[in-house]
Image (cartoon, rainbow over all chains, first blue to last red; front, side, top):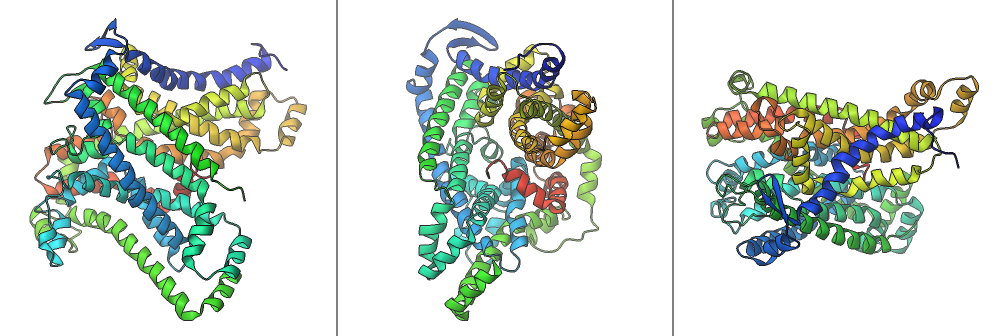
Length: 306
Length: 287
């Protein structure tokens, strides 16, 4: 085994590898390790106080009003995840299947479905906020124009529809991503397999459920896990469309907003607490890491090697 | 594909095939309409007055009426935000591609103790949601004295972009043949010379993929500027947009032209390079 000496070749390798390594160590690994440490201390503003053990965790999980805020935000993240599984990944699978046939115009449709994905969440959030305006927004204007004025709602202003409006905007923004990942998976299915299937069955349904779906399992694993991580990190879209407090009445509050508010304070509450914020960050982090690993292992197990 | 689908069509009969393909076309056309209509309405509204937007939101505007754009050009910091976004994104991309290629080259071309461990170290960074480490990052930037300074953004974006870049570039550099390198070494070229003149020209395709995968999230990022930057003169475009949208809440024409101007650069580049964008942005998810 060649020794890493700081002469000649060893020096050259060190020169190549040390700066990038330093960046990742300083700006990714250190902050994440530090986030865990911060959670065990009491903080006064930007100054670290005493070691308090698990007190911060206990506070955000069991002491009111934090306990109900945590529960409320967590429930919304769960709803967002499952709703987007259907509206984003489910619709993405159907669109991928439609694009896969390569009918005339498929290239154009493929470019169109991915177009919103390249836009900033901030642009998407404001665009839909304007469109969903109760009086002047195009959504309600369209409903009135097609003779369905009773369906017009203050979408973002009432707690029964606000979260769903955000979910819809997110699905519009990101549906192109699972679509094209699934499409790539379908395009890798060998033609021999598809020919063999055609000999056996006429049913499109059997073909999808028994052949295509199992064979795109690697794509499914990736988009499921990415959606899970994304849903529990959700921040920008609710921040823009519903504000830092998850208005109206916390009906759109999610863990990302709640964590940010707790850590950095907001205009109305004003109080910031790095200790409680860090405890929330650690809990979210551990939850995401644990569930994402379980999902990955379970889904990998059903993947088939072609 | 065509031979296979011909036999398929014969078996199904023309009508059944047309029915199914017709359904697929309807789904695709409807979806494309839903995807594009909001963007078209946004661009149309950018050329309208408030009155026109409220009374006829779907009509074609008078494209020569650029009052809204003039307002943005002359009365807001929009150009400054745009320039800041170019600076931050450009500097981050330069750092990511330089440092990422250096690390990937060392890992892929040399055998040394700890190479696979170092690759693992980079890959670990792929899966970690850095947003949750924002409190220590904030303190770190404060201690480094670069809060309210675009260097803080460049540093974080570079670190975030390195894992994917090292991953993509290492895989690609490993596939390059050894012969060229060995011949140059035989001729007495230095290691640095071999890397710069012989190997680097060959890795451009991988650089494009790694570049696109990182440039879009960096250009669009809002979270890190929100925490690190307060000075209006230093804000990036997505962050500046929030300031701007807050100031012009009642002037919808100006709001829509602000959104249109912000979306325009990336939409235009995407339309020109859609193939590269799609493969670049999904490359992390497709193996």
